[in-house]
Image 1 (cartoon, helix red, strand yellow):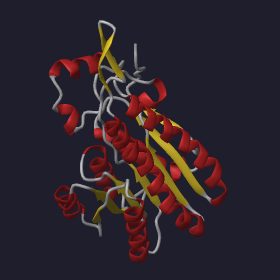
Image 2 (cartoon, helix red, strand yellow):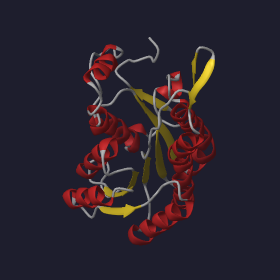
Image 3 (spheres, helix red, strand yellow):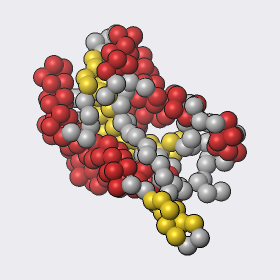
Length: 254
């Protein structure tokens, strides 16, 4: 078991990639602690996982709630070994939409702020809450969810792209700041992944996604979970400050 008894925090762990990561980490011996805003799904998952898995209802955009969560985990388990910053949302829309030279629609400020609060500030909140504990114990792994759109950009995703580019940047900064304390920081940048949310998209959209992916298929949540597992394990002990693309070879815009 590559993560035997490693206390692992996973945000947004009740569904999708977070759920797949929680399941894989539990099979590899980790003590999995997930947080999510979906209490019903979160509790059902930890009941399935066993191995002392626990669930907390936490909004990662709430700094005080995040700190209380992390403090309680450390009080219960005595340490925190791995943080997987997975929680995220989308609120897509064109930056501006113009018809006949006139503005007809634009991305709303509320949509921009919500995505920034969860996808960027949430990552900051959780990492800042665990970092002092990891520094004190002299070890730890922080893994951040980025995206290929944070590298290449994507139409209709000003807010989402801004957050994922920001996550990639924060990953590099924290690697520089925390490496001296034995804390590794890396990110994973998924391509098109067949989560429950994506599966509900029209078939034509899914076909377009497949066509843009050189491997000819969409990724599975488990593909990203395995990347997180490798980065969390001792096998990646010299990988630091990296953003690993797991995308089937896609380059957005081609």
